[in-house]
Image (cartoon, rainbow, N blue to C red; front, side):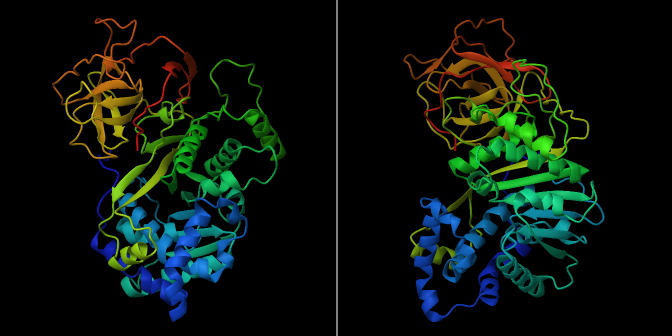
Length: 488
């Protein structure tokens, strides 16, 4: 497995990123007055995409001023963050002629990012189908991709086709046989699916599951799904919900979700199985995909536990961002030193079987999901990490970076504030020091020295049994608190 999520882009990618402004100028030239107004247009579009989301009902692609701002601010920043993430992802072994479908492609953001950051794919005769509802923005994307290819790799054998279709329908309109699709991508698509519901009463979990079922039917045996969202609370929540849907779970906070899902499956000619009653597992749907990244396990997502206010997202430095982009960002009052994102990489399951988590000497795989912070009573700076046993608090973790993979040894202790299990780095030798007071580490009631440290500590209180999403079996988890120090 990759220890780090983010890597520095290579020289080809850095050269391409440096040409993005010229590519935008070639696709959509600006007058001097428009260039002076550009910082203001960037601020206005940012407000529309964040605090004024209701204005999304009128597409910003219809306004040249806002489209120009998107191409020169949001588009390059999206490329910058993707260029750091894509090189480290395990996309599997591509076939001889890979077919990729990009949902909600816009100005070809993800296809361009793949082309410039993955030399292994750039050398193959890839066919990318870019789907969107706006032909105008796809024309802009085609123009910018052609500009970059002419400047950097005129002999590139990539073929780009366009498909005018909403994200929920693109897979069914794709001109391909089942099993021909190698990779399904969607960047900044889930948040729009969440907000643009086609009929009353339909829930996001239903829409995600139906999308996953369509994808499972079209993807090859080793096919992948890559979803990337902004590192906002909404983006992180949607990535976690997509993961739960892929593993056969549903959002139990949305009453009637399974009922509407059954209706949707019946309308589309798919069997609706009788679950035989509620068995307490929380789901009767088979797992369709195995999470590969950032998740290192297929157990329940700790961020979806009741009372947890944190969300799964990662921040990465962006030294490869062009100076001109940083200057525009500063003039618009939106300068940044790092990029933030939430994402999920899934692998298709053929038989509905999940790979068991790997453990050695009681250690479990973990991914760091927070910045460093101090905890009274614990040595060094601590970080939160996501593990198959739930959220963990890792002492003396300053040397780890956010997003880094590691292995942790469970202990019998829990953090008194967040209730996260305290786990030690596998190479660590120091045991956590106990502290007095309500916010310090505490030993859970009922734990005994002879308990197996490789098992999750048992706690009393508001515990409940829920499906771990791993295709069978349940585990008991505490739902009696949320981290005050939010994982980032």
